[in-house]
Image 1 (cartoon, helix red, strand yellow):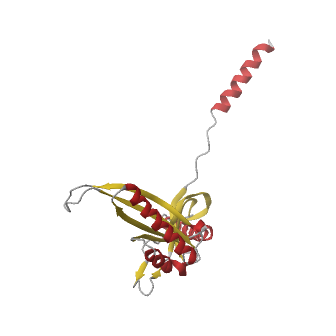
Image 2 (image 1 turned 180 degrees about the vertical axis):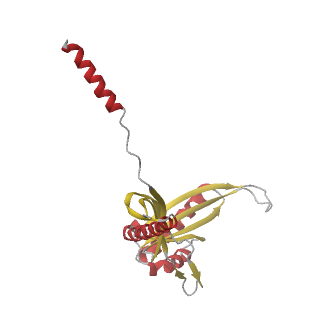
Image 3 (image 1 turned 180 degrees about the horizontal axis):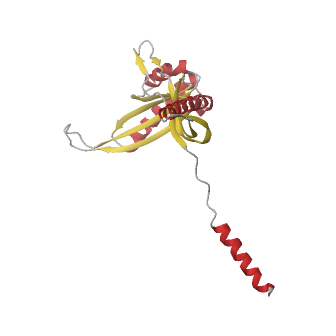
Length: 231
């Protein structure tokens, strides 16, 4: 027999046997999602204040807004807030329509917005007072949050895993079986919700700010192997 004819035949048989191999079927699985959340005390605050001024010319309006902003910065520095903790968020100048309902000639309005960051939450009320005393015309918002949510997120994830397992156990029991080990797990997302609804109480003699908790959430998707109970 010609050996040159045998080799291709052997290769053909080998390729055919390999190509007919299929992946093993998935085991019986129970897939569940779980969510967890934890409330923690905030440790950082952002205070946003606004300045609105009007003048006959655009440069005059701009200068008044800038000067008022500088006055606020100086007042906050005296309070112990560093300039590095302050940011100018926006500065705009616009024309106010002429001869509207007020029948006044055209003039200009300028708006200056400043955000102040502090980790001393006891100063939030004093930041508000000092800003208004220095010329701020509105408090646009007070947001409480976390410098780092790593530890809180770990606790929320643990809560999410417990929630997912409780669901899987209930499903397995309803199906007349039990859970085996975990097939796979995926973190499905999460985050934290800052408290923007800080309560302000009687601005004089000083504004009292009462922050609420920050909610940190997490979610997971877990697939467990399912074992049917023997009858």
